[in-house]
Length: 392
Image 1: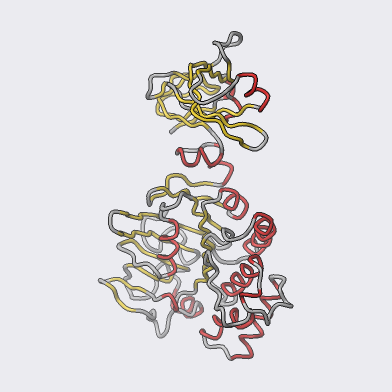
Image 2: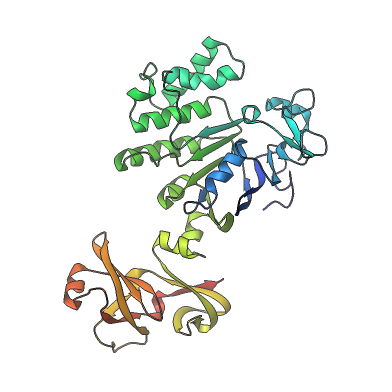
């Protein structure tokens, strides 16, 4: 993570520290994205993901911090009113954000702020926000026209982008004549037609049905893979995040709580939210050798040997349920009360209350044999080999 504006990535990519105060809510998020990298902001509703995206786009005021894109200060303190990170006037002019050595925009409390229309940033909104009175070509050509290109040149760029997203024959259709997947691709083409230095995507697949979402995700992944600049994707869907992003930043209550590639985040969740997303039971406690003592006083035997503050995690499929205390090989066992039962794919997900609250997956046949229903007392068991422990 960067410790100051313009550091870390130098003159390339995105370097941001987003501080936004809104009533009792505070977003405080450091974010660096390299050229060609897609980072997903993943988190529950109200975590601050969309606020972060709006701040990057210039639609939300920063209370503090900075935004530096390819060495150009878009928001935050600056020593020369224009550039940090060594981009130089030539590089900044190439970005189209510097004129005669000064950024378009205005000072704000001793800081430089560049308005949205002067940021080389493309945005794909959740609801796409296509202009309903313009056809697909005119929607895509709008950005290039705003940047000073003539009508014919802008329309040629738009037609080229329609071909790239597989909609070359749909140029004359208005948004109301497009399917959800087609509208999403037009919105993506509109964002990319301006040759953005940064691409922002706010829940770009949320409005699509399941089948269209699957096909469009594949198409979007192809375009992101070919993008030269950085991209930031906001989503609450772990599948979208894992399929589309090179790196995940999990945001809860306005702060990053975990960061890494999909494999590392899903294998070692650090909050209940992430554990639920990936389908794991997660606990925190003090490890001593191959045991972890939980805050409740219960002790879990684990596969790994650790010392100190640790997490212990296991999947619901590792939990076996019994009517009476089980015999046999050494394992973790405890009394539990069935709090709920609901279908989960081909299995039933059983929520357990007790000294160790957990979720267990059982087959319908096993549930019928046990006669599982809310309020019933059972014994739960998990083999030590099924419990992964890792440092907190």
